[in-house]
Image (cartoon, rainbow, N blue to C red; front, side, top):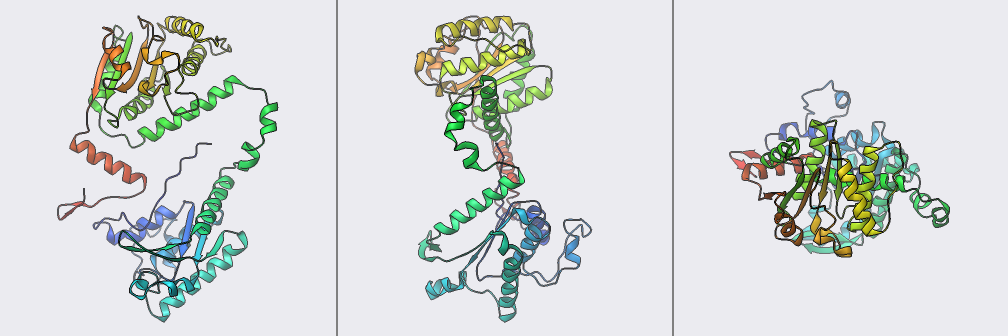
Length: 423
């Protein structure tokens, strides 16, 4: 199903500059989220006023009528769970008796953080959760034991029941919202799988989803590398230079996969009439086997050339190599680009690293990535028709941009003010 989930931890990530608008930041993040609420004996900080920049925003307008001096925790629960999205809410409420097991010098981190009025507000909130969600089966009352200190911080142990409930409940909510059939029914019936006729086209469509999902994870926070990307695009656009292999190489972790993932998306956008066929070694079943890889890529090329015909490809590896070379030649004057990431991750089957499956004269552009000085890199750089592009480390500005993008995925920021630069 390839649903992309991003977790949002509301306990950190508000900068000093944003502190005055922390209510608005927290509430807008939980408004449309799958909500996991955890309540112990602490009620949390309660602002005296609910200051927001857009009080008439439908996501925030309810604050005008909401009782004052309520904690951020309560406001988040009201917004994330009570405002018409109960199907996506799960609650775990800790047994108050757990506090008595904790050494006195560490109890302040677990016990009530205010007077009798604060304790009453917390009891009211728990009762409200129980009243509105108890019948749904999405509320767990759990206990735990004193777990000592971890990295100098007090923790509880014996939370297996809590973890299992939270995971299963959230998964149930995701299945309901996205109309996913029960996991066991969909994947656990072996007899149905055996009786169902194998459909190679559906199989490759499923694999394409795997490759696309892998690429998305690599390029969604992509930063920098404009010089490398522009050079590849320029080479692909040049009629004379379109023939041959473009080799993107670097050390492990240099960002080669991210560059090729970004390229596959970027080139489709700027050249919408081109067909980009991407293969990310290691991202899907069979993707490290060169025979399976050639069969899948040949299938995609064949469909690009003759979309109304079912490809007829050999299974024998040597015959498949010949068919692959014929298809490349046939596609010579078509706008087709092949992208193969991670040649160094191919298995040793059929001597894949010798690259004898790549014709001596490549009639259309193939962009590949591999480790510097790997066997595949050595073979390709010895070929005069190859264009080698080295990937070095990100510069400082690109590193900063990368940090910002990754944190933004989780709705977080680091303070970059001159007086408190956390970057």
